[in-house]
Length: 86
Image 1 (spheres, one colour):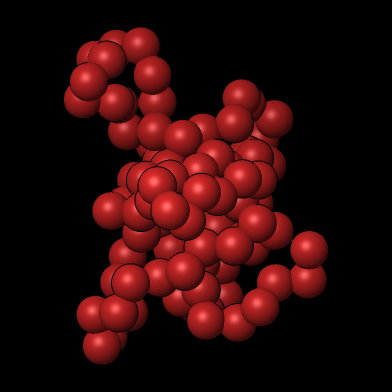
Image 2 (image 1 turned 135 degrees about the horizontal axis):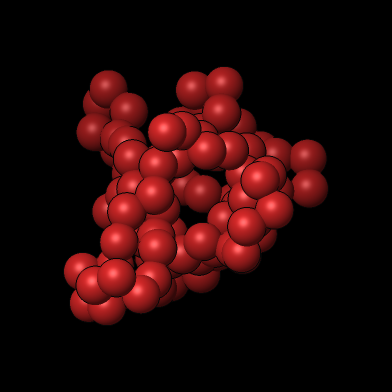
């Protein structure tokens, strides 16, 4: 099931952040490795305020305890290239 949300916080130097979910559930952890790459395989550049579509998976380090975002893509397919209006 696809979920939607907004990048709430992003630590570019560490490669992770949190998504504020539209469904009202607690913020969800996201790591840079779970963003889908664009066609030329450049890394996406998430920014606070960007809209995303994502799935939920379990944290392999804490099975059954913590959800994290996976298969994350930017809403509208901008791959993080456009600036958000934060």
